[in-house]
Length: 534
Image 1 (cartoon, one colour):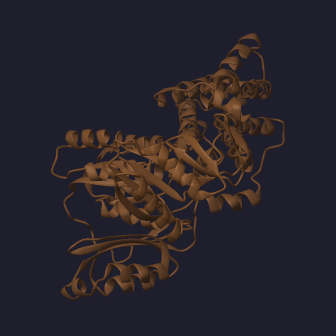
Image 2: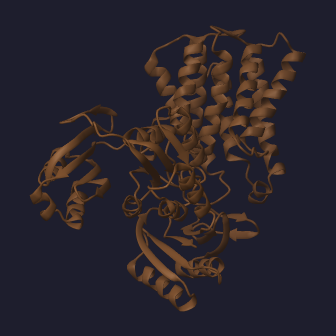
Image 3: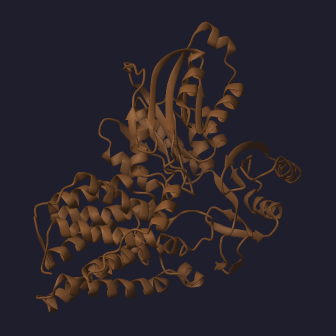
């Protein structure tokens, strides 16, 4: 094949995307840290499948249109750092192809080179031995190959760069010691190679189709639940003010659905909930006053139907805050700390760029702060800020829940933007974060042998304690984190932590350290305890 038109490009991209989707678990398993999260393979798969979905919906066979829509789909669907980098690779590809109805083999090579350059620009501190290296080396070797073989077909070129990408992938442990010790290659780089192998399969006449079993699993991972998302604002009437009891209403809501976000103020309350019975949710709200705004969305089809909606004519307030959190307790905690909208997610599920864009649209404020609360979510948040034009979006690079909570406390609605930004950024530097979770595989990290099922105490990004005893690990973690300068220790209990375990940890802190203690019930998944020290 010497030329690529829009239809060929579409089929090529589909084969690459499906190959990654089918093999996402193998890519996930290559993660160095043995934590139980759906990470690189899942993030890259969901990112690229969103691009394919958008192309299919468009029905276009124009090459520049296919490339542009695919790029936009990846941009909005990007999850995690690996997904954002992947979206930038194909953003660069689309940029090169924007005026071409056909691509020669040389054009295809130049488009990939442009994608590599775009991806490097998107990362503030590029690290070699990652997906960036593999994309750059394979595209550079592809350029050299075409200079020596100007008549090469697309099949020959893709076969060559796939081999070079694989060779580059195998070299990643030589560039990153952490990969070498764990006997792993870079997972993001592996994901990119998997896409190229899907390209190669298509050109060999065996296009990869999506495995239905995997597709079903992905549906679980991406949380495409059935039912409805119900959101409304209720302005209290006189009787509603007297009869509304937050704890009782929460218990009633828990019987009607999940993903509950309830914010109560003096004159109104705001609710977001996922429920199979939206009518009952609406009836519950109506008992306490008059609806200001109501929206019901079909989650599965993502087709929004507006019910009893009144135009929101309220003037935009100066500030809004969006935070990322998983667990009903954490969501309530952030809401209590002035957060306007909580995006569901965290280590086990990284929100997409589009998730942030939707959240931004729901916050009626001129300046909106985003608290990602996870290092793997920051790039998606920043990407959402870049595509938002009508509001000032400031991403505070919080890398943990304790940092996010501290940023909220440091925020002052009466201060100027620059003063608030500086205060929040400074405050998060004073927070130390630890967490307790379990290992999902046997591995070695920084000289420590870790066995599947062991509990791990993680201080920032370092695994400092492992044991089959959860509380022993938690206590050792606290010993490492709390020093004589510490003033406050915050312990956030996960969904698997019992009251007895929480009380034992509280007593341990009280008996061993001269600090104020704050224990919160976060109900977060995966992490038995999240600990903040200030």
